[in-house]
Image (cartoon, rainbow, N blue to C red; front, side, top):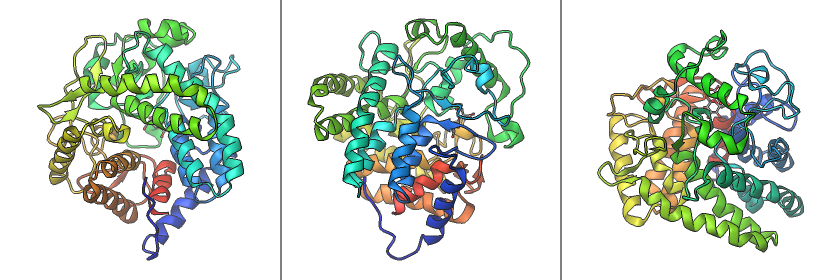
Length: 430
Ligand code: 2M8
């Protein structure tokens, strides 16, 4: 990951605004993604936000990860939302997840495991080496247990690729990649519900009702099974191989292995190495040579999913692409960039399903761009990485620190004063 020093002072306004957003969204040891819209601690948001905190306050950055991992379940899972304090502004909250009566205080599903990646980055850039060693040593067993959980709960057949059982687990909730698999989920008779997201954001920028009905159907299904890891894998009516989760998990394993060696946990090396070796090979089954991009797979039909999304570039972040695959991905990305003013759109802009303002169906996301640029640089595509980075900083500079952006007009959309967008700016610029 390449730090960019802001020697010219060009980005000082973005830096100041980003720091201010993290402070405003700080709830004491954890950061909410955005006021009103997302009032709890979200898993991968927090891990990415820690990278922003690092430029402000190293102790606070470690705290963000400690707080997240303190919500780990006994079986190793780290939940997708932790409900630290009650809030009426988000649905579905603790009462729907059934966590009011349980001491867990969280949802019962997970999110892409970014945490180990952040721990390595904080460790490497730490000024306080003693604190870094102490905290990384404490967090290591929790990270290892979480990754173990992924293989046990989500890859019981040992394929090297883990399953995602809910679109919310992918983090790219209404990606066109989930359309067909989600449509096949039979909708249960749901108790009436009121969406709170539509009170904060225009409905044209959010998932549709058909999607929410199915998101909730799956939540009730999992809740009825008490989120039992042994049951959910076979029970779920939605089961996919998500590129985002698998790319991040693989990269997180590389970073966990690096950490194991730094902190003297060589005993864990072999186990992590086995995961790495298996996944490295398995990823080839997700590459579509005709489309020149990686694709997700529907595990219930066995079919590759016919949708090119920005997650298709994340194998670069994971370092699983070979040289020829990386060249093909760079060429695909260049083609996409010719179709829009700002990259990277979350869906192929020539696809009929591309919607420039609707959440994960078209908009540009700073966190995805950060991962893609990291991957591009690792494979030597520095100029292309620079383009994507500059597009993102220009979006933020001209439109504000939004949740996501219209790739055609640049307009900011979704939530405003958004934590992970701010954190990515800090991680890029400083
Ligand atoms: C979005 O997801 C939540 C559900 O988890 C929602 O829309 O209610 C996604 O963008 C997800 O990736 C993100 O972690 C979350 C908070 O920023 O918002």
